[in-house]
Length: 337
Image 1 (cartoon, helix red, strand yellow):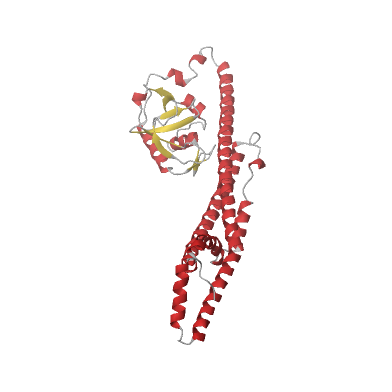
Image 2 (cartoon, rainbow, N blue to C red; image 1 turned 120 degrees about the horizontal axis):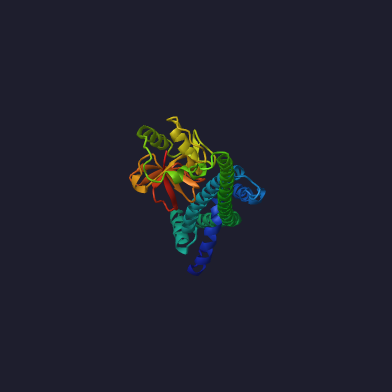
């Protein structure tokens, strides 16, 4: 007849059961294989040279990393849910077989349910002992799978963290590449403007910068065009930022402005620096809906919509949204189309 565990033995045995019965309850080697496959599938940031890649190429790489991170996170969440289910069953098994009190209850019930004949009682006890032995043998086999599952989940968590780190690195590289390309575009535009200016009359240089010549806040305000521009921009709320995009479903900051004023037949260049020159300077106190606000050395532009708010396409990974006029970036000036 199997002996019931003593209270002294219970602590170590119950702990073993909690680790071992998990696999018996449905956590199999197939599940472990899923985690192993995940652990080896993460993207390697070394497969792209950030210094040589364009902003568009880095954006594609970033999209791939983000997709893989989403898939990896979903796999990890599924495994964690399976482990939680298994642990719930393990706790039930420990309660039924892991204490001397639980075993005594089962043995007593087995004896009392048998006939008064000694052989019947012994048979009941033997049956229970065999059942208990079988359960512990199954738990022993399952323990290796349960332990491996916990180890693989830990490894999977590290891989998810590694992907998060790679995404952060890619986002930084994208910002740097986009800034460099924008600077090159601005330099080219400035060179073109300088060449055109040198061919004009000798006094044209003093008036070539509309920003300098229109700083008295008296620029005419076209209510119809401004209202239409604000409504167009609001219609794009929630659409994704993509560098260099000017619609119909993705935008960068200057692309959104050109699209908004384009509905009224007003043509603006898809460049923040050139757009600054194409518009007239006004004072902050004269801001009206549809006016433009330039930030960070004219690297970013937003549209004022009233009540101290602007609408803009901020950055990669973000969407067209409404923000405070004073959103934390340095303001270069206020312009009117």
